[in-house]
Structure formats: structure tokens, C-alpha cells
Image 1 (cartoon, helix red, strand yellow):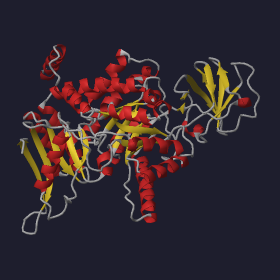
Image 2: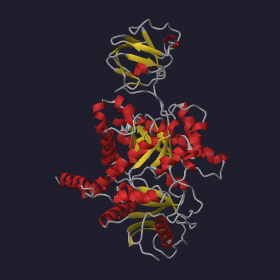
Image 3: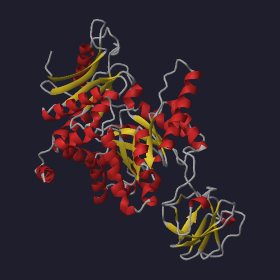
Image 4: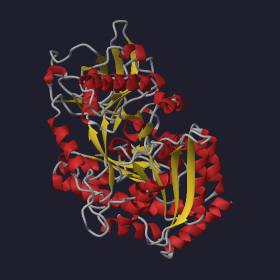
Amino acid sequence: MRSAIAISKTISRFARNECNSLKSYHEVAKSNSIGLGTLTKVVCTLGPSTDSKDMVSELVTNGMSVARLNFSHAGDDYTYPQKLLDLVRNAPGRHHYLKDGSMAVDIPHNLRAVLVDTKGPEIRTQPLQGNADTTDLATGSIVEITSEKVSDDNTPKDASGPHRIQVDYRSIAKSLSIGSKILLDDGLIELEVTNIDPKGVVTTIAKNGGPIKKNKGVNLPNSSIDLPALTEKDKRDLKWACKVGADFVAASFIRSASNVRSVHAFLDRCIADLKAGNPEGSYMRPLVISKIENKEGVDNFQEILRESDGIMVARGDLGVEIPYRKVFAAQKLMVSACNEAGKPVIVATQMLDSMQRNPRPTRAEVTDVGTACLDGSDAVMLSGETAAGKYPINSVNAMTSVVAEADEIWNSLHREDRYELLATGNNLDEELDAIAYSAVRSANKMGCKAIILITMSGKTARAVAKYRPAVPVLAFCTDVQVARRLQLHRSVLPLLLQSKLDPSSKTTKMAILRAEAVRTARELGLVEDGDRIVTVDRSTGRDHDMFEFSHNIKLSTIRDI
């Protein structure tokens, strides 16, 4: 009842246009060229519509936190993805100017992250009978599914057949049983299994007709498939990702915890090989975002989550692999579980799909984006909208405007039960978790403008982000790679600490670094004189201290000095 009353009051306030603190915050940030963006992050897929310097700069300026490189249709030539990555790395962004317009110190232009999305172990149709471009299937026609070559067969005389379709999955007969469903081309054509030959030929009947082409996706709903976690193409792509310093990899069609461990192990080997070849190089393993796209992934979600660095709710294939009526519930449950575990979660696929063709989103799409944010998503993703659509900048603007509205509603609902719920899913260091819990509650209760923290590994920032703070978390890092890997966490704004002092040294006074972080935040226009802030950091004990480390939390009001 209390929650319902709180939501009702919040809606009334929005109707009177009284909730504008974050909106003005975004406006100030954008006017100062720092690209603060929204608390909930926006992931944009790059492609033909956005593969120029000007377009990537526009995406960065208008709220993109993470750039996605889609390898589903990429070949072995990495010239194009390298071009896209370079555009992201070189785009001007939040470090480009200080508040007074003077140039900042010589540090990277922006800290936008790059996510490499693998193709994964998909099942696809192969060349058709007679090497035809398209074959029409009639409703009720008999269709044989086989792993044998069929391109030498004669082309069917008409849509009634006979039809034979080759797929690139040799164990398809073992994965199916009589009555099983086979879905072709994102579920546009449904086949039902009527017989399975001992030689591995599967006979089906078409429940509905339509055209089919080669290289179209094949889904086996409610069936277990026997495919490796990584294909040879995936391995080549992941080697490239490690070599160029990609921040995240999205592992497609993850079905079990062992799949995630396989991806981690392969990436660790890639990093070890790079370090062996170049001991002076700085290589860091990309974080693994597991894509949940089938029933096995949903069934084994908790064990997958434990092994993953983050989750992507990939609703495209998921909506084909499980009944579409169950997708929204699966999304909500997965997002909630990620929140409790303190791991970032991306909701993806068809969020503003109509904007590939139209300059404005549908009302249903706006509701979809806003609901995903209110459910607790750390990030929402644009796919074809920014990769190949007619209105990529309109799309990211529409996304950020809805996200900003949803952020405002979320932040208006400071319910005590929210903190207690998130505390129950604790898998963090006990001391650090207690500090993070206290910092977020203090900031929200005292109306602070920001939480400012210093982190070397990113662990402190992730701990604070878990409790869903209603204010930005300004995470000052000493390593650009660590900073970029924080981009998927809601509320976290990674920045580089403009100091040569080592925070882990016993001779470094944390008070100096803390003051430097606050000064930089002030120069960037993120906080002003009179603002109340919470600072979080960790000091290394000196020889005379009776502790090795000390976690610090301070509540302060900024003043001019």
C-alpha cells in the first residue's frame, strides 16, 4: 500500500512538472561538454548509419556510454571493426573541456566503453535446393531437415514441395523428438516434427507457410542443443578483442555456468599470450556479459549469473525460444536477480525498433524502455536503430529522454525495503559492503549532490552501485581500463584521477587525493560550492598503524577555498 501511494504521489508531481532536479543536472552537464548522460546507461550499436567521426561524436554527446560492435555478420577482416573502435576511442567527450573552457590535462578524450558482441553457436540454414535464392513453403507441406548437402537437388516445382532444408547442426536429430517445434527465420515459419530417421533426417510438417532463404536462423524451442560455448569464429573475434583492449565481450547463447567458465578460460589464455609476447604491454581481460537467449539459459540463470561479470537479456532469440508471453516475466526476474547480486544487466532488442524507419518511437516502445529502467536495468540497448536505421541520433535522443524520466521516478521512491532487499543478495566483501550501504543511504537521506570515490580496481564503485544510489557516483580511477569497465553500472560516472600519486602507497595521504578528486569534479561542473557530498575511499595503513587498510566515508559540504 505504501508503495502504491508513493508511486501515485510521484505521478502527480510529474503531472505538475515538479521533478526536474536531474533534468537540470543533465542540461548543465551537456552545456559544459562533459557528457554526463543519464544514471541508467545507454548502449548503442555501431554500423553503416554511424560509422563516421561526426556520427560517433554525436552519439557520445547525446548519451552513449557503451558502443557495441556486432560480430554476428562480420568476417575475418577486422578493418571495419577496428575503424569503429578507433572512432569511439578518439571521439571528444567528458574529459575534453573543464568548466571554464580551458583544456584538461593530457588524458583520453572520453571513457566510453566498447562491447564486442560475438556471433555464438547459432544454427542456420545452408544453401537451398538447386542453390535457389528463396524457397516458398506452403502450409501443410512436408519438409525434411538434414545436415546433408541439398544444393545439388532439383528446385521444388512449387510451394508444396518436396522440400529438403540443410542446417549446420549435425546433432539436430538427437536434440529433437516427435512433436518438437523447429522455428525458421526468427519464428516466421513453424515446423512440427513428425518423424526422425535413424540416419539423422528429421521429417516435419509446415504449420504455416512463407519464404525461406539460406543463412537464416533456426531455433529449437524447449530442446537442449549440443554445441560448444565458442565457435572457431568466436575464438578469432575474442583474440582480436583482447588485443585491441575491448572492455566487454557479450557471449552469445550462454546455456550453463560451464559455458561462461569456458569463455573466461579462453580470454585468460589470450591475455596470457599477449603478455608473454609483450611483457611491457598493459592487457586486461574483458568482462564477460552473458547473453540469455534460450530456455536453457533461463533455466540455469542463477548458476550463469554467479560466473558472469554481467548479463544481457537478449529478447530477440529469447522471444522465439520460449513462449512470447513469458518474456516479460523472465526479463523482470533476471533484472531483479542481477540487482541483488550487484552485477550490471542490459535489456536489449527491439526497444525502439520502429525508429529504424520513423523519427519518433511508438508509445509502446517508450513504455518498454521506461519499464526496463524502473525494473532496475543498469543499461538499455539500441541495435538496428543506431547501426542501420534512418534516424540514429533521433533514436539515442529518444532513449535518453525516456531514461531520464524513468531515473527521476526511480529516485523519487526512496523505500527502506529496497536497501534491505539488495543487502540480502550480498556477495561482496563484508566491510566494503557495509561502507557502500552506508554511503548510499547517507547520500539519499541527506540530499547529497554526488558520491565521490577513489578506486583502483573498480571494486568500491561496483559495491556502491549495487545499492542503486539516487545521485551520480563520481568514480575516480587511476587506470583508464578500469574506468571504462565501470560504464555499465547504473549511476557510476568514471573519471580519471588527475594525480601522479599512488593511492596504494603508504606514503600517500588519502586526504590529498580526496581533495584532488573533489576539485576536479568542481572544475567539470559536476558539483558546486554549497553542495553536500559523500566521499568514499580506502587508506593504506602506515608502519605505526594497527591496521593494514582503512575504509573511509565522509559527509561534507563543498566551500570555496
